[in-house]
Every structure is written in structure tokens, then in C-alpha cells.
Amino acid sequence: MKSSAFFSIFPPTKYVSMSSVGIDISDQSLRYVELLPCRGGLKLGRFGEKKVPPGVMLSGKISDTKKMIEILSELKKEVKINFVRVSLPEEQIYLYKTKIPILKNDEIKNALELQLEEHIPISPHDAVFDYDLVKSTEDSYEIEVAAINETTVETYTEIFHKAGLMPLSFELEASAIARAIVLNGTKGTILFVDFGETRTGISVVTDGIVQYTSTVDIGGSMLTSMIQKEMNLSYEQAEAMKKKNGLIRGTDGVELSTVLLGAISILRDEINKNFVYWHTHKDEDGNDRPKIEKIILCGGDSNLKGLVDYLETSMRLPIVLGDVWVNINKSKEFVPEIFFGDSLSYVTALGLALGDFTND
Image (cartoon, rainbow, N blue to C red; front, side):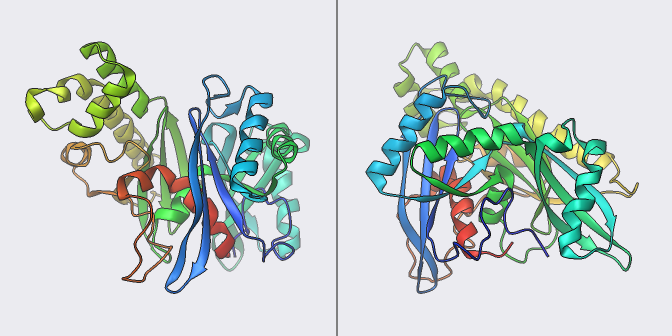
């Protein structure tokens, strides 16, 4: 038993036939993806990216609602979409685990609401929350709860409504990513790193359910700015050089790796800090947490040349780039319309779009 989607706006049965588009909004861009049924699974429908001007989004908060409504209205007009599933950044959401007695499904939310004040700094009257069932015993349920301030959800809902878009659900960003890159039915514990434009999300998933999230202010745009400053280039030139050379030493005689290693080593240290925290802190029952078996990288800058090898050497743990198509289409004839490197930027939007076709 799992909830249908975090912060569902409508009962899924009412809109089950409506095709929706996954929308992932970051501080610098908005990406959208639609998935459609086909032989072998699913195929890409409409997809693309729109730039978000500086100052519209700051650390996951919409700072300029008027401009965001304009961006979404343009998207609706250009792409002709109506129903959407939207990600919410980790900075806005409180995630925790708890235990409750065995109850009927319609009693679980009431029981969790009574416990909210023990776990989050939001009054139950001001919070919106949803849950996943992690596991059950003869006399209890272990529940994963995600909660957010109701004002944040109302702000997002109002903005989308004013743009003429109907949000079917708002969802924890990490949950959408897990749905995209963790093969359905996979058991065990995985740490995944979403290396984005302005920040990096670090999350732990056990048996497909997000157990832990953290965010650090390190992103690909920081690396580009470092190259721009160090080598006196335009931002566009620095971005092109980053993509071409990455951490590979000696490419075209440019030791770009020496410019980037400072920031990359900070990212490595943050990953390691979260890895150590997971293994050295007991769970809610005082038991050891399950061992992390591997690390999956995703996000737009995760395919930086040499990054996987550098982190794998440092972490001494298997590290791979995420396969965002793993739960989308199993046909050997399936050829995605998005190049692999670019697909890693669409991981959250793809995971959201998969919400139309899953019962989790």
C-alpha cells in the first residue's frame, strides 16, 4: 500500500484517462515531458525546456509570481497542455518516518495528523502531508511522511490555475527521480545524486521509497562561472569548454581539471558526509540503517567527463549514471528522442510523467 502521489489534488479515478505533463521547475529552467502508451511500454510525447529568468525562483521558492504565471501561460499556449504533475523542491518539504498501530486505510491520515507536531515545525492546521507505507508487522505500520506548509502548495496551485493549467499532483522531487531511475521492483538501498544547475540533491532510497534527502548549494552553473572567471571567457564559451573537456586532463592542452577540482572535491565531500551520516545514525527504532549498495548520478551536469571515475575512486563504491528510460520502455526498437546526456536533465520531469502510469 502506497499513497497515489504526494499532495494529490484530485482522486486518481476521476482523471485517470487524462494525459498529464510532468513539469520540473528549477532556479534557471523549466522542463516538461509527456509520456504516451506504445508497444513495449511508453514513448515520448511533448517535451522541452524554457529558461527561467534570474530572480523568479530562489532556492525552490517562487519569488516573482507574476513572471512565473507568464512563463507557464506561454508554455500552455505553445505546447497546448492542460493537466500537469509538478515537483516540489526538497528545501520546502519535511520528510520523516514514524510508526502507528494497524489501522484501516481511512484512519491512517487522522492518526498521522495527531503526530505531526512531534516531527515538523509546522502546525497541523498549516500543513499538507501525504505518506507511503514502508513496511508492516503484525501490530504496526512503518510510515514515511512528507509534509509541507499549506501556503506553499496554495501558492503553486494558484499560479498554475492562473496560467490555465490544472495540477493533478505536487510531489517530492526526490520521489519523482526515484520513480524514473530505480528499476521497478528493485530491492536494496541506493544513494542518488541529482547534480543540477544551481544545487545538488542527495537522497537515499530503500526498496523504491525515499528515506532521506539533503540539498547542497553546488551546481553546474558554479563550475561554468569558475571557468569563465579563470580563463576570461564568456559564459557560453565556458559552458562549451566544460562540456567538451570536463575533468579529463590534458585535453587540447587545457588543464581544465585543475580549475574544477576544488568545487568537485567539495561535492565529493558533501556526498561522503551524507553517506557517513546515513550509516552512523540509527533509525527511529535504534537499529542500523541498511547499507548503501551503490550511487546513481543524474541531473544535467552528472555526465561531466571524468566525474564518475573521480567519485568512484574517492568513494570506493559502484557509481553509475542513471538510466532515465529504465521504467519507460523495454523494447529493443525504442530509440529516445532525447540524447542520453540531455536526458539526465529531464529525470525529474520524466519521473513525474510516469505518475500517470503507476499505482505508487
